[in-house]
Structure formats: C-alpha cells, structure tokens
Image (cartoon, rainbow, N blue to C red; front, top):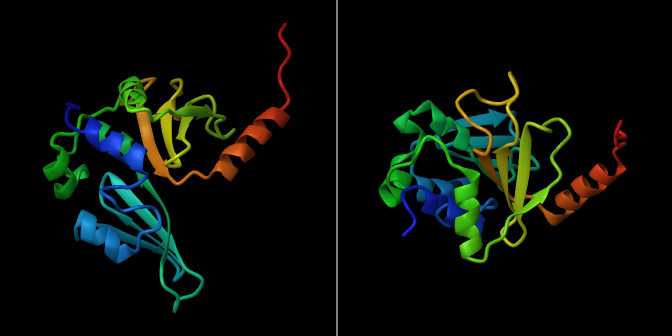
Length: 192
C-alpha cells in the first residue's frame, strides 16, 4: 500500500493525468474532475489558467471566438511546504488523504521503478541549473522538477535538496531532444 499522497503522485506520473484529466482536457472537463473551487487567470482573450491549489491547468486559443485548447498542467508541489491545508483541494484529499509538506524524489522514484515506470534525467534548462534537476517519464510525457542544490534566492527555503519542486505534463520528446542537443553544444569548462 502506498501511503497518503504518494499514490497520487505515482498515478499522475504513470498516467500523465490528474484523476483522468489530461493536459488537453477542456476547462469544463477539468472542473468536473477537480470541482468548482479555483482561481481563474486570463492573459487577454487568448490565454487562461485555473489554479486549483496544488494543480494548475493551462489553455490557449486562436481567437476570442475559438474554443479553449488544453496546453499543459502543473502540480505546484512546493506549495505544500507552507503547510496550508487549503492547497490540496477537497477532491484530492477525499481520494488520497493527507498530503505531506515535502515529497522526497527518492521515494517517488523507487515506487515508480517497482511499477516499471522509469524516470530518466534530462538536461536542465540553463536558467535553472544547477539548482534544479529534471526527470522525465517518456510514456506519459511527465516531467518532475527536483531541487538539485540549495541556492539563496534560487530555491525555496522550506525545501531541501532532493525534494520535488513540481510536476508538469506534457514534456514532449522533441523538447527533451532539444534540451539534449543544447546541452551537447554548450561550451565545457576544462579541468584545471
């Protein structure tokens, strides 16, 4: 039995969805799954996201008359470190129980490995390195962002090295390849 919120994270990384709502789900479909308690933010008439506390879903559209198209979702795992019970909405708490203030990457990775769901480390975006590391699940196209090293003003004080910062989907194979190519083309410092 996987304790508490670990089952939730395993489900998300394995399926690439939040309770079955994937990155392409419509706003109405996500609200049907996660409930009506959300904050809605828009960027003009072509971009929107809904903040359900722990989970955020993002949409865009070609014009104001066009339907919203799902773009991605994120789990803002770092918010749990503030120990605000309201961060996890009622739907997730009812399904998975208590959520701990920090998610240790090592625990999550071991549980996924036991289920045959590997996470592969990919190059970090230069702006985030070395403070963050990213691990990717190719089948579900989920990315897990982990604190790689502490940096004043770069990483949250309430998280430790090895804690999960956030989870996002999708991260396409094309983006992963682009990161790998960019990493190979970066100049390396020679050892002294």
